[in-house]
Structures are given as structure tokens and as C-alpha cells.
Length: 413
Image 1 (cartoon, rainbow, N blue to C red):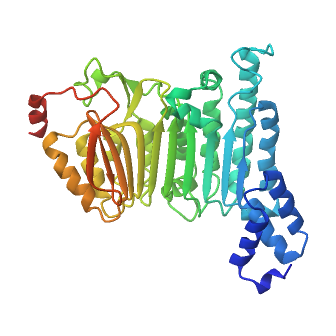
Image 2 (cartoon, helix red, strand yellow; image 1 turned 180 degrees about the vertical axis):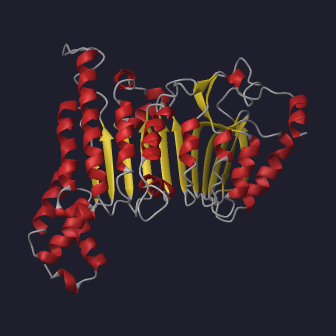
Image 3 (cartoon, rainbow, N blue to C red; image 1 turned 90 degrees about the horizontal axis):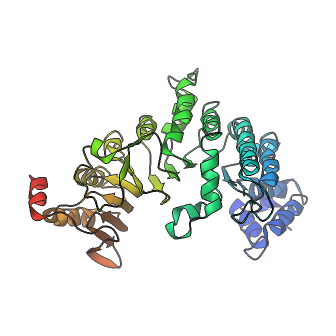
């Protein structure tokens, strides 16, 4: 094998990619890269980058084992290769395969909850010790194992749902407080992506409380936490259990008093912690994803939140079970007109019939927009620049139109 300095870095990494192709198992790739590190000092560097640049800790659905692998993250942060880590992905196990519906192994919910508490307690200890030790960190993603099942209402897994119910009142506050400490102990100058799976939107509160109490940087007027949050370009939040203390009856909210009895989503969650999160600025935010699972017939009302966050550089926006008004939609389209490339919004309260052409004009006039899907109370608006030159409006998979012409005229006035 040639000496690496005689080859461009891109060629060296391409060689490593060819050695570790898609047909290799994770263990085979790991073994191959470890062997390449032994060739010489130059190849040791490139193989180390390939090994440690992207760290992924996958849950195994065996909580006892996962409690042990969490410690690997702390050991890695103490090694010389910690400066090579650019992203950390942790998939957290919420239940053990032994604790299934049939309870075939005889374990009870108390034992399962105890293991889950131990896993989250261990994470709460390890994360603040490890994450600040990765100075080149660009992405931090703390996700739930099998999160796709929670997002799909047709394949909700009962043990996973029960696990959320068991742990959310016991250990999650300490866990999210630990995440706040991760972002408060040092400035991570390259951090630009943050993904969190929340039990409820209120889980952001302990995270933000820790950030608010963080001391200011000696060279800045803001804390490390404020610096790390304000520089984010990609933010993804998944709310798995939308019933929380932030929920209000629809009749208590100005934007829900016209909802009919037949409307299936009967509660509106006003995300006050999200307002606090956006108050840190996020002026460079390019991608915003907020997804609510279908475990409960609840949606999040982001109308007031959006007025506090005038993002001007957004390229991608994905809101699921997040309600905004027609005026808020127009504000989004106007504010980020020169940057938006992808739009997926579910729900918009309703678009007055006479304003449909105005929305059509706004979408078609956006220079970089590739596609848009906007689900309203009455229909779905789809736009694809290359495949469909104009807007396509079709019936939504929701309650269908329920207002009359008189209401529409009143709204336009």
C-alpha cells in the first residue's frame, strides 16, 4: 500500500471506502480499519478518522447490555482520538425484548422500569462528561430506538408505548438536565445539528433551565449554552407523547374556538418551552423539523411560537401535527422566500378559497423551492417543480371541509 502523503486525502478516504464496502458487516469494517491503522503512521491517521469521525451507539433491545455500552462513550472522550469525532448518534433502548406483551419470561413492569431508570441514569452521568470533550463535534443526535414505530400510527408497538409511560415521570427530567449541562460546560464552535427525541414538549424546560443558569463565557457576554444553541443550523425535535402540562383545552385558545365536534384532534398543546428555545436566536437555522407522533389525538399550536422566530435562512421545514394559521403560513413563505427548498406542513388551519391563487403564486415564484406539501383542514396542496409545474389541490385525509361560504368571507375580511 502506498504511503499516504503521496496521495491526496480524498483518494485515501476513497480507498478506505472501497475496502469497507456495503457488503461488509459492521464488525468486518471495524476489523479492516483497525488493521489498516497498523500499516504506518500516515495510514493510521486516515483509518482513525474513518473509525471515529462518526460515532453511533445503537441500542440492542437488551437494556442490561446497553447500560454497559454507554460507558464506551466516556472512554472514547478520554482518548487522543476525541478530537476526530464530528458526530455522535445514540439510539436509546426503551424496552427489553424479554419484557414483551405476553410476559413469557415472568418479568414484571417494575423490573423493566428499574432497568430503564438505570440506563437513563447512566446516560445522565456520561453525557456531561463526554460531549464537551469533543471539540470538533458538529452533530449531536439523541434518539429513541424504534422511533419509526412511534411515528407510524399503524404500527405502534405496545411495549414501547408502555415504556414511555413508565419512565417519563421518573428519570427524564434528570436526563434532559444532563443534556443541558452538555451544552453548557464548553463552547463547541462547530456544533450545527441537534436532534432530540422528547417524551413531551415540556422536556425542553429542564434543558433550558440548566442553560439559563450557565455562567457567562469570560470572553463573551453570553454563556456557552447560548453560543451553542444560537449557532445551530439544523434542529430536529420529535415529541412522542403530546399529553403534558402544557396542554390546554381548545376553547381556551383563540385559534381553536371554531373547531367542530367532529374534528378528531381535540386538544391543543401550546409549546411555551419552544418559545424559550427560539429566544436564543438561531439566526442561521436552515432546517427545522418538529414531529408529533400519533399516540394521542393532540397537536401542537405553533402560531404564537413562530412570531418569535423570524427565520430568514430556512431551506427545509417539516412540521407534523403542528398547527399554524394561514397568516403564519404566509409569513413563513415571505420571510424565507429566497432560501426555502422543501416545505412539509401538517396542519394549516385553512386557506381561504380566494387566497389559493395567492399561495400558488408565492410557491411558484420561489427561486429555489423544489417541492411543497401543505395539509390544511380541507385539502392538501402539493407542489413539485420538475414533475408538476403548478399546484395540485386534492382532498385531505382528515375531517374534510366543514366551514361554509359565510365563514370564509368573514375570515377574508
